[in-house]
Length: 171
Image (cartoon, rainbow, N blue to C red; front, side, top):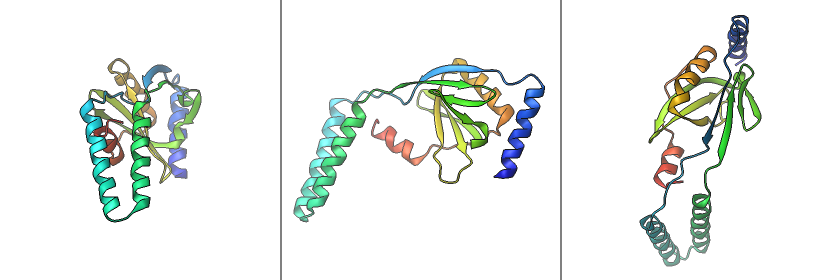
């Protein structure tokens, strides 16, 4: 990990000597807003009723409480609109809503297509840290990838399981 941080620092110093990294600023939604139809709600409550019925049949009273909590949580999370986030990619690092993340926090990056949107995925150096996913628009995408490609190696990124579940549940 130390060798990787030294390598990024050397690349960063080399870029600074050549004139620096171009600063790019953009705004994007934190997540994709989904319309939840009546059918989505019917399926949610239908599955909940079946699970509650199974819990009553097996006399699993804690299970009933968990099903109710999960349904309420899905309703609350699903009803919140996506926040608009401000991003700034500069020579210091990536700033997300005013919080700076240094390039040394990441071992690489990748780009994946998520429905109709492109997603920039920053891969952390810490073993159990979650990846940072950022939606990018087509008009900034190539420019962002070019700047990041000068500093971090680009890697193939696959869709994650949590993301797939969230897309299926329209969260």
